[in-house]
Length: 154
Image 1 (cartoon, rainbow, N blue to C red):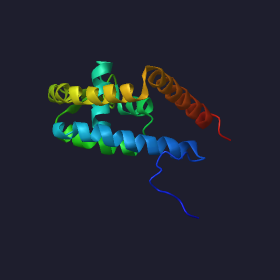
Image 2 (image 1 turned 180 degrees about the horizontal axis):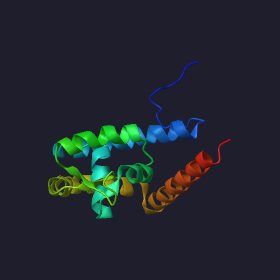
Image 3 (image 1 turned 60 degrees about the vertical axis):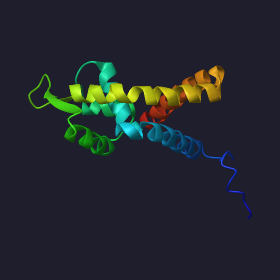
């Protein structure tokens, strides 16, 4: 079978494959923009979520919100903790540890945010406002459907 591999926009019959392909391409845009800050988009997102929550969160709650398994989240949090961008604090129960954005992490996030915002604007412009809004809604719906399917699997 002869295929033209330059036709990257060829839709595949698998929703997961198409989402992952789009995600990889978009991740590369964000990572390139964030490179001068020393952050990858995965790290930026964690710092951003912690900043927006404004309160210490458990690792389980953070993983649940980001749809990340514990191993991946632990691997991503490690460098942030070593860089002192996040820290762990005691929770309500002495055995419970919560994650909080450290002042150094907030400074890194603030410095990286303009580069992140430029990619956001570029994608929004390239997609058009209607498609941007539809994409955000569709991705939220897809996440909800995937979570529902995961809870209801036999």
